[in-house]
Amino acid sequence: MSLSTVRNQQNKSRVWDFWQRLNYASADQLMPLFQAVMQPDVNWNGSQPINQVVGVDAVVEQVWQPLLAAFPDLKRQTDVFLGGACGGEDWVTGRGYLVGTFVNDWLGIPATGRKTHIRFGQFYVMREGKIAESYVIFDMLDVIRQAGYQLLPPSRGAEGGKVIASMTEDGVLLTEQDAFKTRQTAQLVLQMVNGLLRYNRDRDGGDLRSMTGGDQWHKRFHWYGPSGIGSCYTLEEFEDFHQRPWLEGFGDRDHNFTGGRVLGFGEDTVLAEGNYAALGIWDAPYSRHNGNYMGIPATGKVMTLRDFDWYRRSGNYLVQNWVPIDLVDLFLQLDVDLFARLQAQIAASK
Image (cartoon, rainbow, N blue to C red; front, side, top):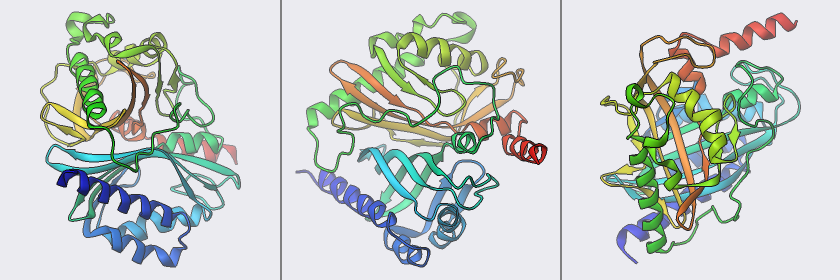
């Protein structure tokens, strides 16, 4: 076993143990638990309206204590979990749900008194055995939907309930994975990413054939988008319900923007283990707002994006893809404050 493999197994073990302990930690136990696993000056980043929090004490006080106050019985259910070295960094990443009874308001979202599922996706950068950077997207719009409020037009894709976990129930990778399978997965995802970059909005418009997605995606592959977009259960649904509307709004696949944080990318490779892979971007300039998106006319502004992907490969195809996107942050850049919409709906309902 190579040194990088040993380090990866150690990193995954530390994070997994941390997550299990969090499931049973009371508010007064949080600080020592976080201090044991995070660097003192950890750079923690969450989706809107939380955003950047610096320092382990601040993470506990500003993020987790309010979260536990709102959901005292909160438990983490993890569907995909992997790690590895990529792009000069050691990564651990996972996705799933935080589940708890919503007893006190959270971030201005009214408590319901009912069980609530908070869809999460998270990336950690590990240095010297501790978490040095953290990036997490909570599907805020789905929490708001469960509280009874609709802030965007009805999703084109399927919505409601929990998205499907790994169909093979093998997404939590706590042990060393086969190196050949890992390379196969990384190469397939990289081929898919490079195919997406072949699209040119001015040349291709609504014709998606230049991206050659069908070469890597199974015809019945599942794409699980965030609340507001929904899930698609075939390649045709994905193209019709998400890809074409998205490219109409944000179509600069051939852009040369730079900046932001790249997650799980390296030179000619992506973060992968076994049949699973993960990658993402955080506050990265992504595209100009070229056209209408969910009723918002084009602004022409360069938009940044917070977007994660986890993939499952089966044979020569990608068959499942989980995709949290921070739509609240995206719409804020379009001059639409979705949390202000929420407060207006709450006021109107009183």
